[in-house]
Image 1: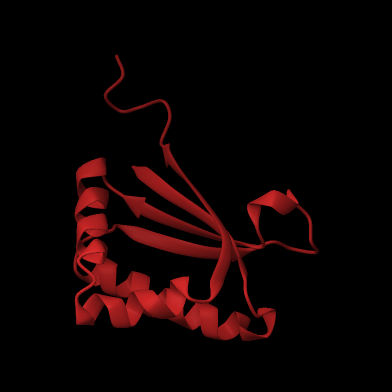
Image 2: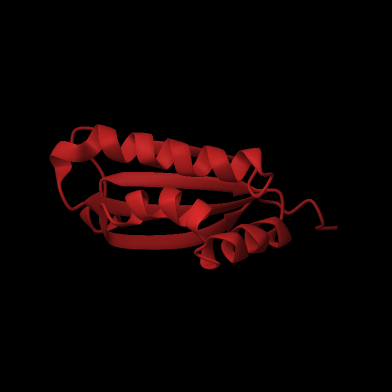
Length: 110
């Protein structure tokens, strides 16, 4: 499994529940269309954690890089159907950082 990890803060923290709903709508759409395997949204608790990572973490699971690449291509198309779901998420976020992780040890490893 591959994991796209995204950390961010919100431009307006009073809109935290709107952000959560927007993330849910967007990522459930990608999952329903088999572009990702799953996802999770978490929030830093009691301010505990590295400030530079941001208050929110979105973890997106893909079975392999090919699946994640298809998801990126779909989102990058910016067609009306995907953009109406993507825009409400990224327009609320600031200080965005991301990383790509994998299960370890790799299943392919001998």
